[in-house]
Length: 171
Image (cartoon, rainbow, N blue to C red; front, side, top):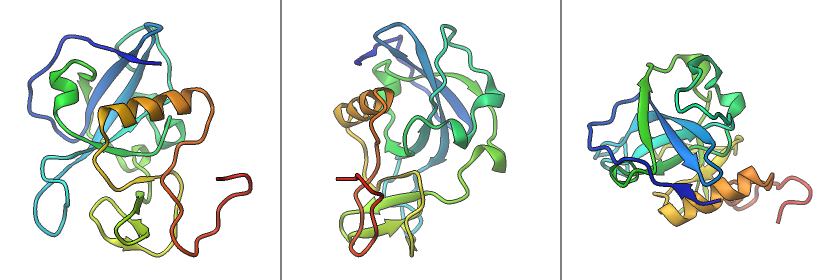
């Protein structure tokens, strides 16, 4: 389901920004910025944005901030860049600093360069935790595909590392 373009935004993003995306059926889904990338050892994606997208459909572009919790994620966290706001695919509509109950206890990403798992700061983690995404900047096409897959009820996740066990029925 392709995303609709809204009016683009050029703004400085902050952790806690809540954004909306509009699907081609005119319903809205919401997301939240949980980290802004930095250069140096604490971030491989300078300027990259770590965000969540929630499985909360609405006819109104204003979110119920209390419902934006990790148990309502549509798909694993993902890394993106500014341009999705500039082009109008995401639009910031609110701001609320995320509390611990609004964040995953552990972020997990599959890192193809090590065939293992890392956290949002590129720190190696021993075991996969769910939801587990990809440690890479998402292209718009990949993001749109993952939203489509998640809305269709198909699992969206990062690959499984060497030696890790996959759930039954996982390709």
